[in-house]
Amino acid sequence: MPQFELILPKMGESVAEATIIKWLKQPGEQIKEDEAIVEIATDKVDSDVPSPVSGKIIKFLFNENEVAQIGDVVCLIETADELTSEKADESHSATHQANPQTPEEIKPEEIPGINYFQPLMSDLILSESGSPRFYSPLVKSIAVGEGISTQELDSILGTGAEGRVTKQDLLDFISARAGNLKAEPVATSPQNTPSEPAFAAKQTFAPSGSDEIIEMDRMRKLIAEHMLMSVQTAPHVTSFVESDVTNIVKWREKNKGSAETKIGEKITYTPIFIQAVAKAIRDFPMINISLNGTQIIKKADINIGLAAALPNGNLIVPVIKKADQLNLIGLTKAVNDLANRSKNNQLLPDEVKEGTFTITNIGSFGNIMGTPIINQPQVAILAIGAIQKKPAVIETEYGDMVGIRHKMYLSLSYDHRIVDGALGGKFLKRISDYLEAWDMNYEI
Picture 1 (cartoon, one colour):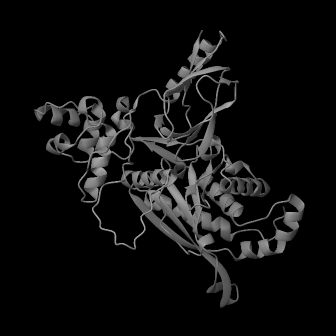
Picture 2: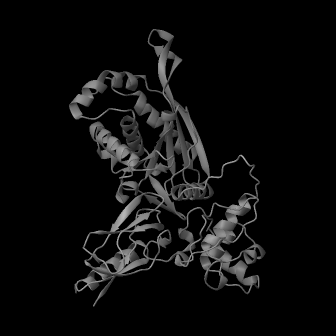
Picture 3: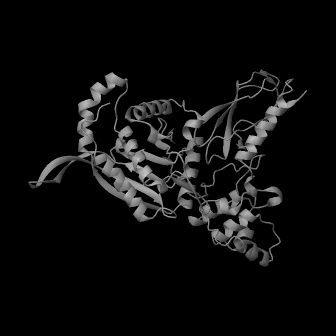
């Protein structure tokens, strides 16, 4: 009877792997088409993977708590459906289109954050060194871009086949070297996946008897690794501007009751901020990009991600797709819906991917400004500070006067590889301009 290979599907931009949390069926059991078969977790979201076919489960190729790469076959299903082979071919074809190259086959110039202006130099240097050890073109290019000598490269204990140094081994070494720590080899699972994340360079410490040692949970480890990767990839620059949002505060106080009655939703400041950001992105589309080596990818859609704190202290970033095409009511409904389902761990994979710009509201914690870390592969992120009453000089046609105004700081962190101070500063000022020009007579 034909067998169907269940492939781990692509879960979103920049997601390369997922942890098998729980198998919802067991070998020998029957499963129906579209019935959930496995629960997985990525650094973006937890989700169930449905079976594309009906049949009997033959074998699991990954155990619970093991890490699988996107495109890996995770399960075999026996089915009498002759169309299974066609579905398998479609599944393989889609996977190859989304992941046309294995990690070791990725071209060096496709890895963001590494200097590849002289891509042949790595082959020249390492071939002339006389080292008998084999290194893939990707590993050699990263080594040259990071200034790693052949002697240092030869000293790294590889976890790949026949002791080869993998990309992950090299990134672990770079991370440890940056902190003046000794890089240590990490144990691997049967799938050759490091059992510890790349950021976990070993450090000797001696806790006292009263210290509490808390092991990071899976999601915190993924967040930590993603943040470290972002800092190592992009040179961060942060610009600040103080914005007068008095009109917005007064308008909301005046309309929040009637608006909730009319549309059945609470009006918060967040949809107004998103609307201003989307307008500013339309004015400065080179903020709405990502980098692929030396290639600039200009995004067609404006998809705004909202960094949301979870009850367990972790972080998730749901995305409002095509935010520039929504009015204030549409943005309000989208924000409230995503916020509520984020807290209840009910987000779908599609709702945390394809973001092109991120907003984080640090003002909700009483912070006035911050320097947020860019959410790769984006190139900028906006932090919104707390709104405070302040004495301010007000210019009128009759002269200057001092009055009480509602003000807040906006902080924009951006990738200085592609966003210069002029673009970052103008974009941030344009957001502020839209907020300060809010129409007090705006009707929902």
